Length: 382
Image (cartoon, rainbow, N blue to C red; front, top):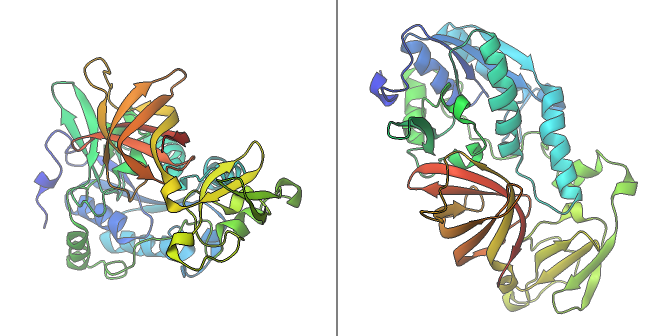
């Protein structure tokens, strides 16, 4: 049995507190729910039906939210003897995540649907639903931590203890009022510890289940195929592919099939050596152009972000310095942040970053604390 001290004292719910646990059917959320039940809390499990792909019987694509995943979550609830519900949030997911995904790609940007899902569905719609059930907290299986800053009298979002699984990047849009009623029960554990605990708790149907790898609603298709299945052909505009030196390299059938840093599937002459390799270095939406060039052209030192959300007050008068991640799997890099108007900032990286991609998020840290983040509008500075 795990010690209750794995949830720090400031956030440990009182015995008998009602906790709604978002269950994806994977090992992480299953262990979170089972452990909370074991500790004597009033647990209610809930899975979200988010999209038509949830009707698939088997999960063959390494995603979450399929019908088989919901069945796995239900079996965990039955074994641990707590109520379990499936709530239909398909329309919310369609509007906030899928439509945004398609629109962003059509506009030459590369979206991050996992951040949008956390922001718009799990910690907005699901939080409201949980509170309507009389819950005291919403718990998830994220690898992240919430700590209490007594000096500032507020909760702070922090990295998960496992550096290889930390998911704090995806949560930078959370609000202070949501942090105070959210639990991340496995945030202090390593992934192997979670799997070991699943076996000890008898959750054999999920203990060795592979982690989700693909975007749940694409399932077995390319992004290009998915987007083209959802929009009329008139919205897919052909254009030119140009080298950064101005040379014409060919034509494309729509910006939606490209992203910054892409090398394969460019539709240009095959390169024979690594020195000849071409990458997508920019997508010019105004003129519907795909710009390609050598890998060196991918490295930039500045980015402008929009819709910046600060979880902690930045106090630029005392310091503009942060560590920043330009994507989930990237290494954090030292940066200087300069505020602009309309919730925008300019970020200067101490070291050039490869493939700073419009549509992706930049998330700011100091130590283990998440200070905030925003969405990349543009990159510059070779």
